[in-house]
Length: 119
Length: 507
Image 1: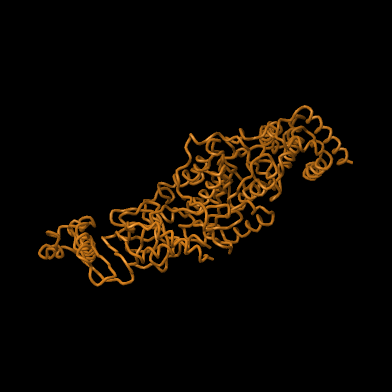
Image 2: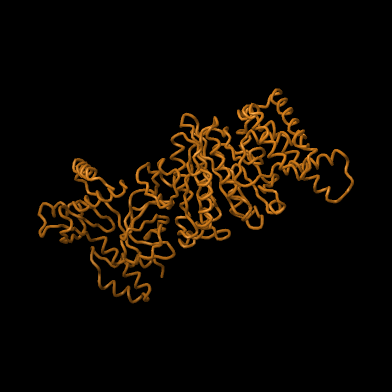
């Protein structure tokens, strides 16, 4: 089976944004070990595409903020993770895109800039 | 050292310009790392030629974009990059920081110092890949780039903005011609012509060879106007692939300032090998001799960046001297034919001539300069005009003379003069000659002043003749140095001076 076909099968494994166990059982019966590995990789990737990670230094995120994030990513599942190293602000990870809006990143950038600009 | 005030100033600036916009990063995960090529998933926003950074600080460049994966070449060894490592895009196309501070330095294709001196952090960021100047910005080649080598300056002249290939087997003096040309730019500093910034790009060479070139350039004081970009055989193929592009990016920095630049690519055969290695690891379809299909474009886009800009665009120029190594004098191999067709001429070195003691071992029949003639000064043009034809005739006659048949007086005279011409055109390494002395030598031999001098004394005659004229006839030197056409008056003076010298020499 070609990789493209396995990818198609992985796409077919989702029903209404959730994995369909019945379909998956039917699919895995058709795959060998190597193909199964690729299939799982695609499933993971697709699951990841449906998930948005929000890192915040606070214990609890304000309702106003969660509402805003929800409106930006309407069809995605949002997971909140506490990360005190950010100091202030947020880090949002949507699949392979990282949106940095925190003090730690600003300071890191400044350090890199100074290192690159001065002997 | 960073000053405290600078840090505070930058902090203040950052605070003042702080915008509430999120900074976006495009990240990926390493799936495979083999032979200096990394394949990563993610990186959906990556573009060709973009610089990427791995979480351990190593850097690379995007070279392949597939549906699910991105392939990158590494600038370092990549031993510490493992499966699952994060990689992020920089949003920047690969570039090198260029400034005047680079002059006299030895740097890697990424701009990091290789001479143990401090790194160059300030300057203009020049992209390694850039579309060459268009026809509107260009003008025809018209200014000479003097190599100081009699044979080249007289018969295969090079103009500023030209691309002249130096081709031949190993050990025949290809690098020597390039180094001599760099050395000769020192003496041009006092001439009417603009000084030339020289860039020597070493690709896939032995470190010892590069060290020798550096030592020679330092010894003769040529490092004062030369930059060395080095990616030796010990460096990853990625760096060897990038080296000529880094060199030309630096050259463009100086050219944009209106300066004339000479860039030597030593050599493009090894560059093609490095690119072949990368392409095979990237699983690109292999073509003839396993080179990828775009190996012609690899060199054409590089050499197209050699240019003579018109005055409206600053009037700067980049003259390229690419070097290609052949195997068993075969100039019809894949890479040599490609580069011959790209360049504006070639200097072909032949092992037979080298072994016969003719150095530089340039084969005049196979060497040509397609645009350099327009850049030759009238002085050398008038002196060397008939030389090419006479030499060609001599070579033809010499072949017949081998059969030992009886020859008439005219043919014998032609053969004798040919022998002296060949002797006069011999020149030791690292001893470039000024144009005035070249004109004198060529003028003397083509006008028969050496016909009665024994062949074995020709070289002695020439060196003493130069000394004599330099000491006693500075007016001749000064007039010829202007490059203007030799007038009847100056020819008369040259004739008298040469006769005078001959009397002393033959005593």
